[in-house]
Image 1 (spheres, rainbow, N blue to C red):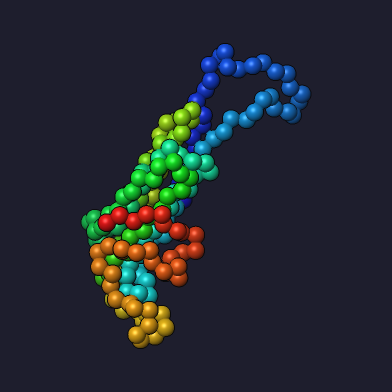
Image 2: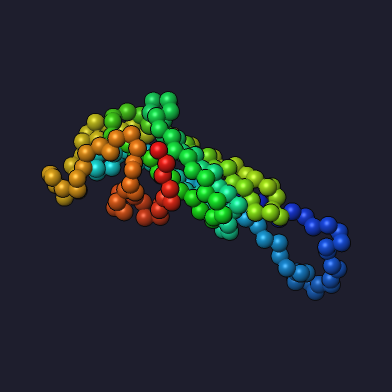
Length: 180
């Protein structure tokens, strides 16, 4: 996980009012900060014969905008990419789900975050990259949940058109958008 903090812009000298403090106390209100982090789940074979990778950005307050891009690489070459701009939010999430093929996968994501007015820096970039993951032919051919004929299995194709079932996704990841 990668975390970055944006601090509010400094006020002009005429905006600061003097005050006296007793040892151990602070003077005036504390300045708010914006904490954002990016986390992901690396690509992996799912029981429905797909490869799934996810990414989420979480901030402790609304950002003006989170521009999130997720890329799945196969054999170090871009294989599939999704992007979405999330306005006025404190979280963003994407996933890539493709038909399972044996091979070496890696996954990266970058978030360009624009802070609300009054915060510095006005923007920040968070990036995360996973190490290579090898998916075997046997992992791609694992039985679907419920045994033969259960769960509707089969490859989804090059892009997920619906949110994967809750059981196929990690409990903490709830993507807000998917674009193909």
